[in-house]
Image 1 (cartoon, rainbow, N blue to C red):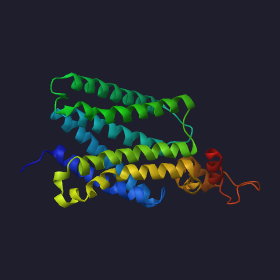
Image 2: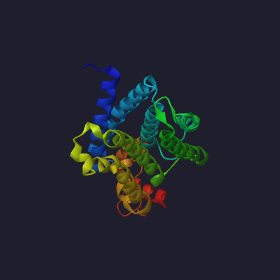
Image 3: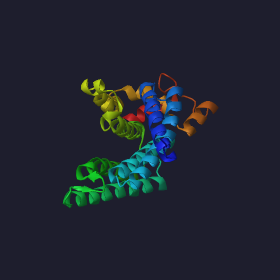
Length: 262
């Protein structure tokens, strides 16, 4: 049996993405293993989502088209959020907002057309298949608009944006394989609900990490690994030497992170 190169890239990228995403979630945030796993996750998931969107278009599976584009958008904007300086915005944020609005609008249009059709479908997709792309894209568009209006994000809010977008993209991938396609696995795994648990695990971990970052003091401990390039360079050159009144840890980046938190 032969497979198209796009299908092979989609499956391979998704498999590597699930493994690397799991490592990134379980490793200490900002550590070297987390960064390496995150970069692998970025490349593999961009490949898998682009391939999935193309295959969905070819097969008239419009929900997969929207799902693939949505995952690509979430991964890209999450990576950009972690790489840029605090309080920084740019043309990329405007493009991201337009992409999110387009996904939400088209998902709503296709969903309505599917609901009004005699079969309740459009192509091979049911009306209910467009609910998640519409809801997530709308939520993401609101976040993009807030960034543009507020002039960027700082502190815990910036990390939270990175976390939820990466985790939700991983959730879409895991649900697509473990929940939507249980026939690919031995029957006993479905009977014991292990596949369902694996499918929603990224969503549970997303809630856990967002709670730690936004509602606890864990951000104080995780802030230093999220140095920006400019802050790290200043620290290495001694440009920001701590003053006698600085934080008792003597770390200017740590002190700035705490101030941003509060």
